[in-house]
Image 1 (spheres, rainbow, N blue to C red):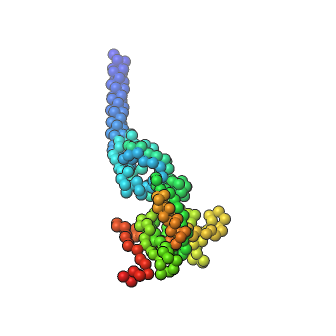
Image 2 (image 1 turned 90 degrees about the vertical axis):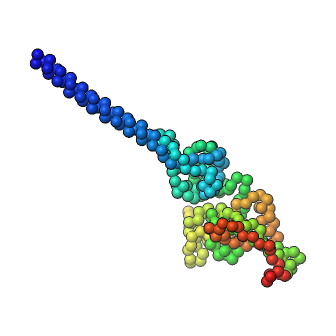
Image 3 (image 1 turned 180 degrees about the horizontal axis):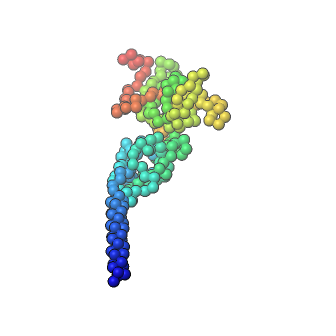
Amino acid sequence: MRTKIVILVAALVLGGIAAVLAANYLSSARSDIVASNEPIDVLVAQEDIPRGMTAEDLLSQKLIALEEVPRRFVAAGAISSDKGLEGKVLVAPMTTGEQVTDSRFEVPSTAGLAYSIPNEYVALSIPVDEVRGISGLVKPGNYVALFATMPTDGTTEGEFTRMLLADVKVLAVGGTMNAEQTTATGNDTKQGGLGTTRDENTGQPMNTRTLTISITPADAERVVLASSAGSIWVALLPAAAEELPTTSGRTAETLFK
């Protein structure tokens, strides 16, 4: 009789332990299910996107946007803030509904200049100096206006100046696509801009008196002709500019009108 009581008590204890373990398991499983269904904000492609676009263009054109995705469906490396894309370019095409991940983006200096050129555009380098290049203060990523001065009758009085292009993105200054690269002019140092850039490997000075801009092939023809037959000046646009400048052009006769 005593043996039966011991067995009964042991069974009740084991049953109680099993019930507690089962309850803990169900609670943990329920928590895992709830956690896996927790909505997480991630950036998602709103349409098919070709490679080469900058993160800034993707965001401004609303080609990528934040969407709520259950945690269990969030891709590895998914980006939940536009700050994670600052200064980067898309190096692989994306399809509609695809989550934006780190592996799709690289900084321009790593990806190469070709990945910084928008679709249907080309990169064109134009020669500039300290004066026509705004004293070396232009940096990759800035937007500039180009002014062209062309002779009309072979004399200074016959020259005509007018804005050639009003909104041009600068892809590179000299040989660098990084706005933070340190350059030196004489004994002074500054960030980005024109001047004498030091080679990262040899430390030797390199000539950086060119701006590489992103324009359409048709505009490239205009710039090449203007640069060859006349001269081009660069004007830096405000970072917060909302309206593009417009002009009617000037000659010596209309200079003071």
